[in-house]
Structure formats: C-alpha cells, structure tokens
Image 1: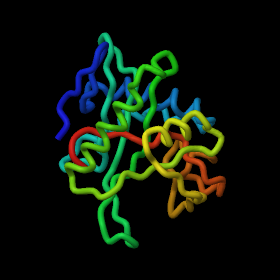
Image 2: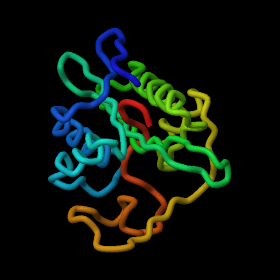
Image 3: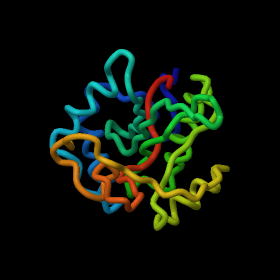
Length: 188
C-alpha cells in the first residue's frame, strides 16, 4: 500500500477525508479542461463513501505541494473477461496547469501502476479524449499503447442530479468521459 512518495517540492500520498473539498475542486478544473459538464455541487460528499468506506470502491492519490493539492489520480479494480484477470482502471489523472511539466503526472502514473501491481492486477487501463494530443503523447512516452475504441454510456435508472450530457453517464454516445483517467490511494 502506498503511504507517501516524496519528490522535490511535494509529496504524493493517499487522499484523506480532509482532502475531499480540494479533490472536488480539482475534479471541477479537470472537467472544465476536458470540456465536460460541471461536476455536481455536492461532489465531495458523494466521493466520501466511494473512497473511504471499508472496503473502498475506488482509491485516490493526491499531489501536495506547499500545503496545497495540485493534482490527483483515482482508480478502481475491474475484471477482464477476455484475460480472466483483474486490472486497474485509471479513472482520472490530473495536474493543475501551473504544475504541468514538473513530472507530477509521471509520478502519479507510476504510483498507480505500483499500487495496481501490488494488488495483483495484470494491467492498468484508461482512456483520454482523442483531441487531447498532449495527454496522448504523455501516455506514449510512459510506454502505454493506445487502443481504438469508442466508450458508450447507457442510463439504467434515474441519473444523479448534476449529471449532464457529455459526461460519460448520460448516454450521449459521444464516447468521451469528463475526467482524467488515473488515481487512487492504497491497494486496488
């Protein structure tokens, strides 16, 4: 389980309940960057049970620099029927614009990869919008291989308030999700 990873100028660590408001703020910045619907106003409260129940549904790692959160990654454990093996889905990976290019994205990705391996996963998978060429270059430099697929969403019941078209939950068929795809704290 990841505890803390120190780097010059900051630390990557598992999120705590005290971080929820700052994480929600980062999620809002991330959604705006990805041209998605705004996040719900009560996102921090909604994330709490997913990240901090026992066992958690997802994990979150945060980057803390000088007492401020400047990035995050969220991830969850999933199952691949074709591989008959567990993998980790990186849901969001985001670093604020002012801190891009400082190596925090690579450090977050490495931390999630380490947690995935420690949890027995065989792969780390995620998606990014096809227009985000900077992210695509970043992932290629990290050694990842892209796969062509379109992501769909189909509503199966009432949608939570604040969830809109184009955010990956409303079944818009566009195939884009709003958030970065990486994150989590601890073991998947």
